[in-house]
Amino acid sequence: NEPYDVLVEPSGNIVVIERYNHRIQFFDCNGRSMGFIGSRATVMEDQLAWIYEIPPAMFPKPVFEFPNSIAKDSCGNYFIADSGNHRIVKFDPTWNVVTTFGSQGEEVGEFQYPVCVAIGSNDLLYVADLNNNRIQVFNSCGNWLFALKEGVGTIENPCLVKVNKKGWLYIAMTFQTRIEGFETPSQSREELRELVVREKSECVEIRIAEGLSLEEERKKDSAGKVWASAIRLLVKSE
Image 1 (cartoon, helix red, strand yellow):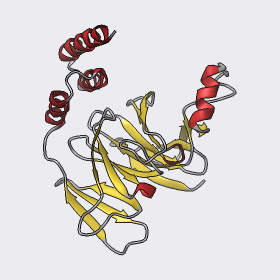
Image 2 (image 1 turned 30 degrees about the vertical axis):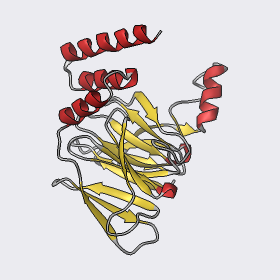
Image 3 (image 1 turned 90 degrees about the horizontal axis):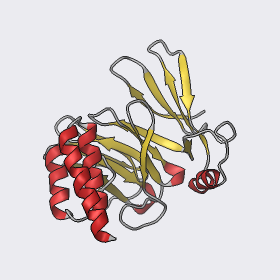
């Protein structure tokens, strides 16, 4: 019901975001359905279900509220723009929820209907924040990096974002007749991670995100050292 975005896997399988069915449906290369995940609920309903221990059969997860868009990073993780819940949902390669980030609002890292997500070659996420008139940029762990609000003109109601192979970000806007283009950061995923850590090395959340990122890259020894640093910071803060 109202398929809004499609991702074609290297295998030929197809992932479809069904906006009005509030789910993700999977098809093989011949168009045969392989099943789906997701049901409709708000974040508050999801939290209440957890508090009151509602059985999965009565409250199937994951939950969405008008999902709009899908993108995939270099480690095989999937990112869904869960527009009505004003957040991004991250799944691992086997479709387990890793994390969510964002909530309704106008502050840094908050959204007013994230309608599209695109990922660059260095795994930066570009999220079209529709009613906040901006593109917010995150690393693959959901750490906010910066926002784009102006190009040749003001960004107004951005509805579509795409990154080409040369690293250019293109933005389409709902009520405008032009496309804005931006050259995106050229640093690698590793360089961007190190930059964030240098700036906030004493932040537990940043160190945890660093560990998760290294785990995704299968750098377990390096990740172990980062986890140890994160634990020391936690102990120190108590």
